[in-house]
Image (cartoon, rainbow, N blue to C red; front, side):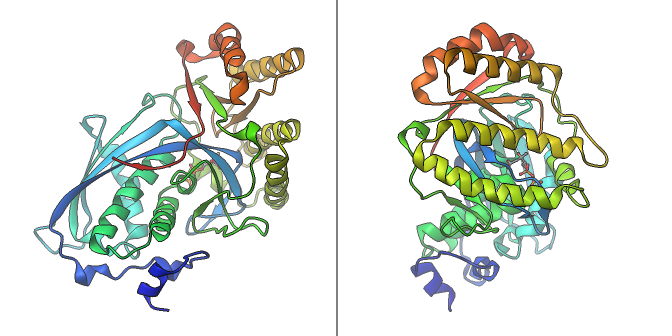
Length: 374
Ligand code: DP6
């Protein structure tokens, strides 16, 4: 099939080959600037364990967030020399950031066969996050997806024929090569990444919007991030994923995540909120259990993480509430709740949970619909 016909047709189930572009020969643009704003996301069924190149060992599903986002501007101009080296600089929150360069260098190496123009230009990457830098919130999902959207805007300028669907799928494909979870930040409101028999169009290569029915209670879902520990993560997620190699429980875990995708699909459709809560909390604790039982082992929760979890459980029972928690690979707690409980839960947060947060800090967020061009 020729490239042009792929662009014109429904691009479901794209293969790696379909993401290789040939626009380099036709390239005529000397310089330009593009800006995208992309959100973070919070996984309900977790991605934990990967194989080369950035392929997940199990499918995952996440809510795309709205307020926690990265805005990235990518300025590009033709390089003066023909050197094969990538040429770029990174400015993060107003300052040159050398520390981010190795990760972006690696990203460029991984994506150059799909976007060969990365070799042709000098790039200035200017980025800022809406959430505080040292909040312990991972910025790789929003950061890598924002950069990938910018790269796709350049590809679109070089090749205006690409369809909108291909544009977003390839953006997600590129984002995945930067950071796995970033491929779920391109679209909203629920996104699945990883092949699963019951999810239409699902792929290990990119995230797809969850297109099955979702009951009203799960619309506009709220997520308040309780910042328990704003420090650097004790274990990077890349190191964490590698701990799943030779992990005694790995195969069962991958199977469980697959089953949990089937279950959550039903719960979302039926509005089965108690079952949803049990599954989401169990996923969070299982993620941490994987870390506690790996070699070497880690405890990423802090005493205050557990205090918060106990408070949530108490509150849920005494108030007949539907609030629940999930965790990333760190100590912060994501408090998830339906919009109709917003007022009550926010009172609960200020009165009973803020005291466990570092400097009393937390961030209110909610489900959003993905990347936006600025
Ligand atoms: C615990 O996407 O940060 O948040 O692919 O190595 O960049 P890399 O890992 P990353 O892992 C995220 C793991 C998680 C669970 C999830 O988001 O699904």
